Every structure is written in C-alpha cells, then in structure tokens.
Image 1 (cartoon, rainbow, N blue to C red):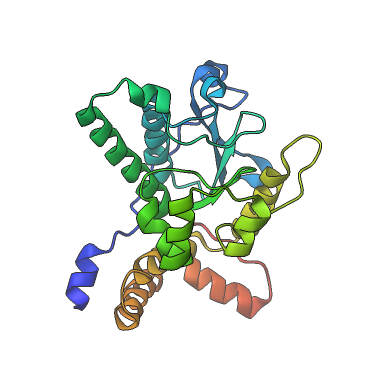
Image 2 (tube, rainbow, N blue to C red):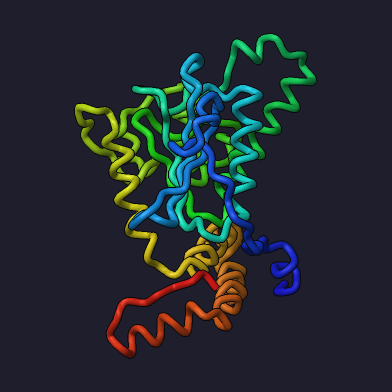
Length: 265
C-alpha cells in the first residue's frame, strides 16, 4: 500500500523563474485576458492572477482558459512564488462561469473537449503546489466538476439541493455553509475581498514554503482516502521535509528565539 501511495503522490517540482505579466513595467500585457504579476517589497513571494475579460464578465472562453492554464503552469515552476491570489479586473464581477455564447457555436464534440479542459483547469488550481487563494465578491470560481467537488465540501444531501435547485448564495450564506472561509463587507472601491485575501496571503508568506506545499499535498490527497492511508500520505510528505534547510532553520530560530529566515529548500 505504501509503495502504491508513493507512486501516485504528486510532489512539488523544482521551479524556474517567473516571467511576470500584467505589471506596470509590462504594458504590452494589458490586452491579455489573463495577466500575472509578482508583487514586490514586503509582499515579495505573492503572485496575482488578474482575470480581465470585461466584454464577457470574465466568462470562461477558449482564450481565457488557455491563458489561465498557461499562467498556472508558469507559476507552478517559479521558485519565488509562495502564495497565489486570483482577482478580477472587472468591477463588480469575479467570473461569470462558462461562456455560453461561445459554446453555442461549438459542435457536440468540441463541447465535450472544452468541458474536459475546464475540469483539468479546476484540478490544476486545486492541486497546485502553490497555495491558492481566490478573491471574489460574487462566489467561487465556477467550472466543471461541481458534482464531485461540492459533495466533498458540503456533504451529499446539501450538494444535491444546491445543484438541483441552482440556488444562488450570498457571500454570508456561502460562508455559513463552509463554501468560503471569509465574507467581508464591501467598501467604496469594491475591493474589500481583495484586501482580505492580501491579509491572508501575508499571514501565509512568512511560513516555511516547503512545509506549506507538502501540507497541501497531504491534505488534498489524504482527504480522498481512509484515515490509515491518509496517515501514510502524511508520513511520506513529512519525510520529504526532514532533510530540508527550512526545517533546520525553523528549529534553530525557535531555539535562538528569533524569526526564521526560510529559503524554500
């Protein structure tokens, strides 16, 4: 069983530097539907994916999905990125869901292929070794796979109720159900949720990056199996952390009563 678990676990891969897009220093990216920006200064290590398709309320079209997959693949390989924030560049909108106008022009075969890409996109976001944060004023990032993800989050009975009725939830209702961790009152600029996401990102940022990534692997994989197998997954992940410089740095900082200086190795 342990050998099978080891072969199926997907551990973080070595990273390459990020080619930032969408920052003020790169005005050529302004026309892209998906833009990537690595923050600087005290926020160094936080990256943002800006969704910017105002003509379709950030609907999930072919170009949008392709650029988002490209951005996620790039971020997965970047060693400097520790926290990822999704945000919208369209005021009052996070993501409208599938682009039904575009889908109407597809053949049945093309629809099947595209929906499969959406499932892959949601899986890529959920399983990314980078800690993912989703900033939204309207709800969760919608996409394919809801019949499988929602029951695992809320339980079968409540998931069926929400899916069968197509009910829309407010932020407060989503938080009460456990669909989102935080719901915040909107401010005049319409970016209160983004600021809350930044605050949470800043809490995660100083933590040991290898431990954070491996914790995500252990949680995501462990929740899919029985408790004994989950414990084995945790053991495999922790074994990956034992030889790291960050673990030794954390122990040294505790002993010397100082803040740790993690390097992600």
